[in-house]
Length: 546
Ligand code: PHE
Image 1 (cartoon, rainbow, N blue to C red):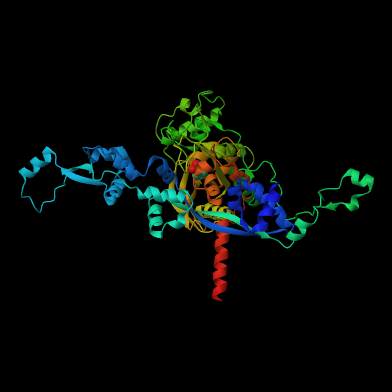
Image 2 (cartoon, rainbow, N blue to C red):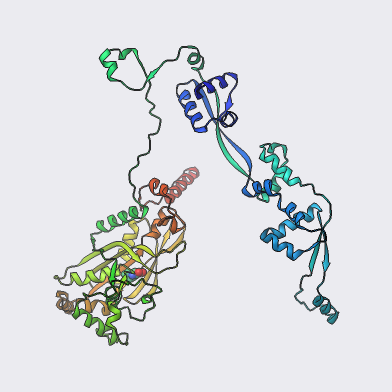
């Protein structure tokens, strides 16, 4: 008998519930629903969705069915001549104390105090020291079985629930079992199926054979008119396409790139994961003993260990600036090592890209310019919910005459404004290569709190001047005050907020749910979904008030 005939004959007797029928007759649930939906579409059946709450055993509840309830296990764990409570507790671990409580409540166990010899001595020594609070050492208890046999009512109740007869138990019992996390309520959906308007006609008239498409033979024989064609079901969903899909980070990246391009920024070349310490640190006036230059924070390359091509002239300038300063600075005052500077590493920030770009553009005549980059950086971090050893950074800088903190705040507000943030706070911070430096905080409407979004500052002369020396900017520099404002932040943080991901390991790496990547919506950074929802709510409240 086909599933369709089973359904038709069942519904003839009385309306039925799909879950019950599939369980009773052991029919595959999906196949049953498929057949039912097709008959419903042709009005042969009427189906109403039914949501019901079902009480089921939790994993610990199921365990009780095979191994016994914890209290019965504890009862049987007590030998005939008793056991020390501390020993019994060791056997039961974290479950120990609550289970002991259960046993006492059931009246299965009795206890007797035993005092250690030391405790007795203590008592004798200080018999009348009232008033003074001394930390009491709890005396251990000796536990004995109080009854010969136990009647485990909880197990009986659990069996009833296993047999799906929870209606037999009263609310109080169910509440206790729920509190003990032995049972839980789950929601199940099913359909109640009854006869539809076309039922009689469909079951009495001879079955029509529906054609699903026009075939060559029908045209050749010219009998296509005598066939009945199945109607298109425009409501049915198609099979999901199996195309590739963009990772959320890439979606956010492309939105950020759009924001920068709209603001007239040019993109920097970020094609060097492996960078020399020189460009990553020294050219940024980051001293060689800086903790970030330690192997604990940075991944150094084993092969090739050292960078060969570093511009000699520039290197000398950088060395002097670190050692004795210049440009109004006294430098870091230490012996700068070329060896250290040539060490290759995986770049720790994209500011290494900015330092190279600044050097490149200073070879051309000066014009005000704006640059950005978005790419991967690496740090030797301990992995946790918010840190990975590799992540993406967005970096930007503007070079022009007499730029100030006001310009920096203005540009940052405009850029982050495009990403959907409105309120900002700036906090004084420290970077070896910027002065002043500011941490950027933004108020996130969706999360309803201030979050740190980046770091920024005005590049120090000790960093810029050596990069510009001997270039075309050099002469220009004499007349005007060339300055560079810059900022950087991670891409992962805004992505996690946008896609409401709590743990970064669910965004990058082998634990990512591919369905999340496939089904994730496109990114509209200006309009985080939560904000839209909240705005709608606000509007509704306003309407109601009016
Ligand atoms: N490089 C800094 C970081 O990794 C960000 C930054 C860029 C700060 C430019 C100031 C100027 O956090």
